Length: 612
Image 1 (cartoon, one colour):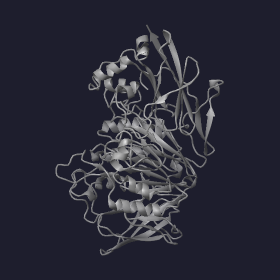
Image 2: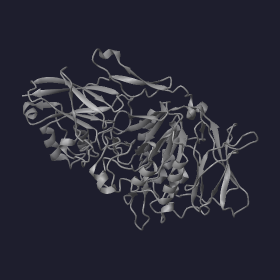
Image 3: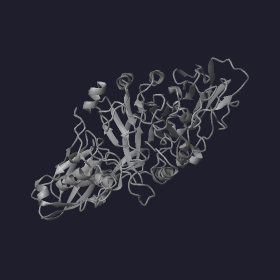
Image 4: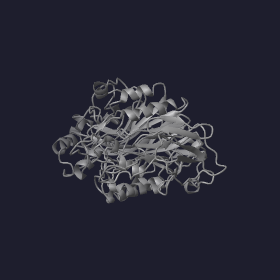
């Protein structure tokens, strides 16, 4: 990242081979060096095949008649053997599949039939079962739902939902058998905040993360889940942004964020109508392998006159909470639950802000008690890997949560820092995120119920996992002078030059280990000497977030203040090692080895100069 990194020694790589993640140390490092970088992004599991060969393209079967007085909706979940989206003779119903109207959850009977109560404004959807795949359209967007809104949306700027008329005679959900979703090994892509405000930004996303995903074939079964802020307030960009999913090698699903709302709706029930018309239900679930993915709508937008995009809160309404209780109650206890939403349940970046976390977090914990769970969020445009037992002052003060019961990951943003910063050769802005991490996507590697997370920087092969820099008194003075001049500050000269006076007045070697967490370690060897443990700046033991030049990522800040964007003045994954005050004048090389909570090692080097 940026000007701070001079050399990079990758310690190894993880390959997806024969359906498992195998860590292979690079033999060229020699004795005493070991480690692994993230999985080979072009890796393919044992059951994977060409997506174009395996994709089930189709839609929900809607059967109409003249009746207008139905109080229930019914139909069949069936195996669509000829993949024509119509239940033909010889195509049996699939028993034991969950179907919901957004509140109640029922399970299909022995013939694959179901029946649900009708609500005036509802989305009926099926939960994709393991061993099957729901159809996708020409853009690879999963098709597993039907909107029921007889008179259509009220007048909305971006259209909302067209009138659907009376309840259909039958809503039939086609499924195709799938070895991909049957496989106990799954690789689930999680993309945060595509957040395109303009067509130009759609092209930035196309050239960046979506071009990367087009080269990968490891997520064909589980697919990609984009967890909100699909666009940036202009909902007319939905068609162009959803078309990016046509580049994927797997199904795409979406969730709404606070920038995906119909801001001119006068009732909460219509706030996501345009999203639902273009992208699917605002909340739902699906299975792949032994993972049960629960996708939540976590944004409450108050409908009021002259409402603004910022008038939102992190909250889940009672109707969705009732669905969540029913969904989890119908989920076998031998599955791992992946709970995703746009606004995180809790996060580090906004730990002291109520609106940026979820009001019902303790109730959700109670619903999930005793389950194997990992939860995901976006929204903050930062990357966070929070583990069970982590604690922060804001969580306790605002929500009464003493410590986290399971892993909470904030997945970062595809848009990074809202497409800010200098333009790169790849055809997109640098867009360093709020915490100094680079834009990219998260992948959950799931084997049975064991989940391992990895982050892939946009445009990278997955080996780039940290940023190295030096934090000197001279840098801190520059920070204090120009912290309010983002995009207009003069460049910080000679960032890797450290005077002897700087050493005497405290200079740190800084490691921003992007997926670092409680349980991770960072060790530094200077000029081949004995490795010394660096200190994490944020312990997550009940304190508030620490903010300022001392706790910043100099590499990120030097890009942000000069080229624009946020300010990486706090992070939960920053480690520091105070450089010895007696370092001799001349060049020095530091080798940094970061080890994550799963035992994977990553090694990089930085060369800096001590001057008189």
